[in-house]
Image 1 (cartoon, helix red, strand yellow):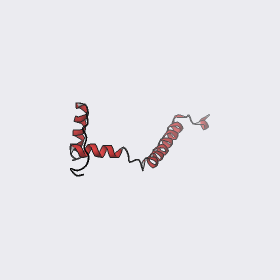
Image 2 (image 1 turned 120 degrees about the horizontal axis):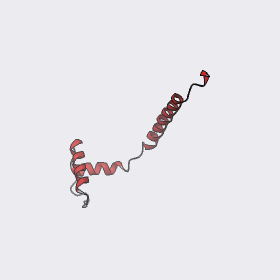
Image 3 (image 1 turned 135 degrees about the vertical axis):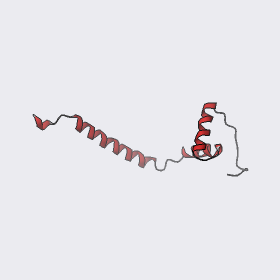
Image 4 (image 1 turned 60 degrees about the vertical axis):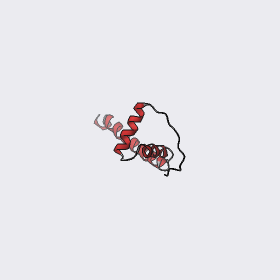
Length: 77
């Protein structure tokens, strides 16, 4: 990013600014770079469908295991 890139002012609450500043420090980025990275990430959903499918499979398996554990053994009658 260069000084010739477009700029704009952004109004945010002091609390949100504090959170972004803290995140920038944790990620070793400038405040501008942190905001830019977070904004860009909202447009990058190329792997979201695959991740959502994998998560759904994990949840379904866990639900089935929990249901099997909670059901009384029908062979004990």
